[in-house]
Length: 219
Image (cartoon, rainbow, N blue to C red; front, side, top):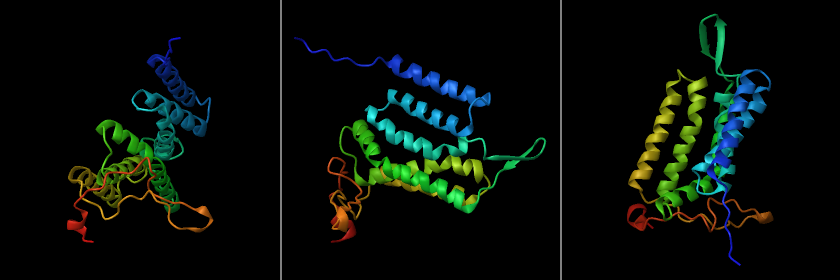
């Protein structure tokens, strides 16, 4: 008996996701649903729509985490613009702990998505990415994830803008120059009690280590 491999047509994946995304935005604009449900639905349908370009469907879960962490300044109506007088808008201020919390959520989402970033880079390059390239990609994701926060709440903060530019520049240097890093591997579990195993990578996701690390960093 011949084996048949069934695959979901592209339009069956794209059409419901695009329809759901449009419907969520329409219902939110009509005040039929609140800010939080609309925000969650838009992130879910956007992540599902990204299945068209992702190499594996399981990568939608970490992508959803990134969208949920980076999109509140854009999709939640409660923040961003404050109107004191008709025709005069000014950025709404965040409390320091709120801004730090949003930035920390982006960093945590990027850290949780590191394996997905590795898989996508490996799919594009057709080989394991280097440690410097992975560091650059993760740093770039952190900067892009914090960009809506800076644009919406800190548009006049030169320090925030410089921090983003510095992160992007450092990410580009790491990705292009691929310098050898002093830390290699990171897939082994440290000797900790209670079976705790905090580690950077696992055995299936270990970046390539540059061979001239001894000449640069010393033994």
